[in-house]
Length: 435
Figure 1 (spheres, helix red, strand yellow):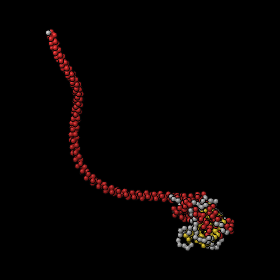
Figure 2 (cartoon, helix red, strand yellow; figure 1 turned 45 degrees about the horizontal axis):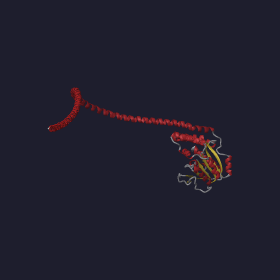
Figure 3 (cartoon, rainbow, N blue to C red; figure 1 turned 180 degrees about the horizontal axis):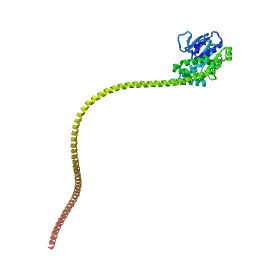
């Protein structure tokens, strides 16, 4: 293993060193290998320089002849076109409904072996990613983009991958590699390094320590990655089962140091970050003070000039004030005269008001007398009307009595006339009789 490969980030070394170890089980001198979803470093070829590689991904990283743009669910190659097909940390970034098709395509174009490495959907893996993402969020206030995609798409279902490989006629084996808690600790160190580049030499040294002393024995009941291996040759499967990978002696000293490295760097980074924020705050505060001082100087200069202007204006104002005082005194005298005249007028008004009140009282008494007189007049008029009515009634009675007297007189006169005539007749009769 070259010194350059031992210096790469531990997470890359885990993937590619593991895949290279599994491919070497084929014991082929110059195998043809297709890597599906290869990153831009193309590191797998450096671990297996004797092999021939072709790399694919959804987007081109350049115009290299060993790269083809291809979708993992529709690989543009014939059946069994390559001795081996490898896919590392790709399946969890494919939407879950498309993963079965991608695994089937890898099995279709593989002649002897398929190696798929990825974080499985296990509680300890979710916990490790949550811990690592928490470190990133603590430093940057957001989720780490690739771990966020793991949550969105979901981690890989081991039983689905194994059943698809088995359905393609492959014998399936599964190997775990990389303790999940150690992975979270080392990823936390890398996240801190991004925030504080000064720590890069220390983190690089930690990567080299892991790659050279820990990787080979980094096995656990709770691994961060599973490697699903599908082989067509029974002998290849037997060799892998007889000598399972990643089972070297565990370097406890190096593992313990790396396990505590991230937490120590975290405390240091948070302390440095707090100090940096405090210094930034102090610097901003100092700059604000300097700015305020400059502004204060300008304001004091402007204030002094303004004070001179105010003094000159005050001198003019004092002269005007004396004139105004004199005018004001004259005005006060006029006002005093007006006040005395006003008081005299007010006294006169009070007297007039008092006289008016007396006259008003007299007027009210006269009005009351008029009202009483009017009532007596009305009473007399009413009595006169009654007397007039009585007189009229008496006149009618007198008229009636006069008419009755005239009628009686006429009757009496008529009676007298009758009597006279009757007497004359009687006299005549008597005289006649006498004769």
